[in-house]
Image (cartoon, each protein chain N blue to C red):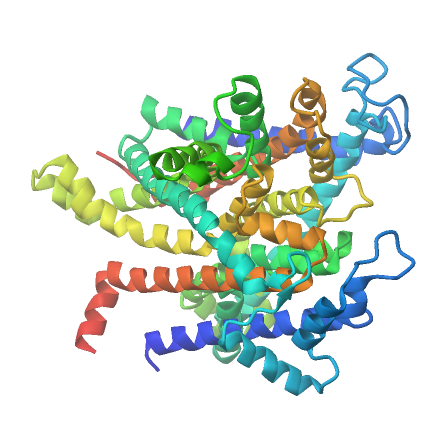
Length: 275
Length: 331
C-alpha cells in the first residue's frame, strides 16, 4: 500500500508539473495568439493541432492560455487563504481571548454556504481576475484556521514549548520557531484541497457565464462549445469541448492524487494495522 | 451558555448577515437598482418594462423611502413570504420559485441519498479490505471519476447516452405528453428524464464521500477497542457494523454537512447542462436575464435550505456521538 501511495502521489505531481509548465510557457509555446482568427471550425491538422473554434481561434493556444488563468486564480486564492488561515490559526491557538474572537468569526463564515454565495455575488458583480481571487480567499481560510488552531493547542503544552518559555524566548520566537513548523503539513494539505475547490468553482462560474468574459479560461471555452447549436450531433465536441473539460479533470485529478498521498504521509493512523 | 443555544445564535447571526447582504447588494449597484435593471436606454437591449411592472418593482424596492424603513419593509415582507416581483416572468418571485423547488428537491435529494449511502458502503468495504485488489480497484476508479467537473461529466453523458445511443432524453424533467396523461406513465417519464442528471451527480459526489469514509474507517480500525472486539472472537461483520462504523460516522457526518454548499452548486451546474427546470436553472436564467428580484429570492431560498440542512446535521451529530448524548442527558 505504501508503494501504491507513493506511486499515486508521483503521478499527481507529474500531472501538476506538466500543466504548470504549459501555463508558464504559454506565450512561448502557444502556436498562435489565442485571439487571432483563422478559418472557423477547422479539423485537426499540422498547422492547428486541435483545430479551430467557431470563430477560427486555435484551440490548442486557447487551452494553454486558459491554463494560465485557471491555475493562477487557483494558486493565488488557495495560497492567500492558506497563509491567512495558518496565521489566524496560530494566533487563535496561542492567545486565548483573541482565539475566542477569531473562532466566533470562523463559526459564522463556516455556516455560510460559500459556493452558492459566490455564485450569487458573481451574478451581481460580474467579477474579473482579482475579484475572483478575493471571493475565494475571503471564503476559503476558515477551515485552515480551525485545523491549525487545534494543532497549536495540542503542541502548546509540549515540553519544548514550555522549555522555550522557561529560557525566556519571546512570543514571536515561540510562534515562529517552535509552533509554526508543526502546522506546515496541515497547511500543505489544505492548500491543495482549496486549490481543487477553486479550480472547480472558477471553471463552473465561467461555464455559467459569470466569470470574466474577457479572459480565456477553460470554463469559458466549454461554455462557448456547449452553446454552439450542433456541437453534440457532429464530432466537433471531441476536439472543442472535450479538451478544456479534460484539462480541468486532469488538474483536479493531479491535486486529488497529491493530497491523498500527503494525507497518508501526515496522518500515520491511516497506515495503522488492520486484521 | 449551553451548546444548543450557541448553535442557534450562530445560525441566527448567519441568516441575518445573508439577509442584509441580500438587501444591500442590489442597492449598492451603480445608479439605483431600477436604472441598473432597465439599463442604458441607448444600450443594445434595454429592458422593456410596462407601467405595471415598473410600479411593482418600485413598490418592492421602495427606493423613495429612507434606508432603515426600506430594510424594515424588506424584513417584514419576507416574514409574510413576499419575495418580490419577477421581471422576467412578470409574476411573484415566491410562486416562480415554488414551481421549481420540487424538481431540485427530487433530483438533488434522490441523488444525495444514493451517493451518500453508496459512498459509505464502498468506503467501509475498502477500508476493511485495505490494500486488497478490490480496495485498490475501487480507489483508482473513484479517483478517475471524481475529478470530472459535474458540468463536463453531464455533457459527456449527454453525448453518448442521448445523442449517440438515444437511450435517454437530451434534457428537461418530463415530456409535455406525460404531464398531460399523468399516472404511471408520468412517473416513468420523470425517472427517465432524471436518470442522466442524477447519474452525473452521483458520479461527481460519490468519490468525496467514499474517501472520507475510507479514511475515517481506517483510523477507527486501528483503535484498541476494535482489536478488543476482534479478540473476543465476535463476528467480523459485527465488529464492523457495531464497533467500527458508528465511530467512523462522526467525521463523515461533519464533512458531508460542510460540503452541502458545494454539492448544491454541483446540482446547479448539472441542471443547467440538462436544462432541468430546477432552482439551478432558475438562478442561471435570472442571472442571464438580469432579473435581480428573482435572483435574490432564489438565492435566499437556496441559502436557507442549506442552512437548515446544516442545522439538521448538527443535531444528528449530537445524537450520533454518545459523549454528547450523555452530557445532554445528565446536564
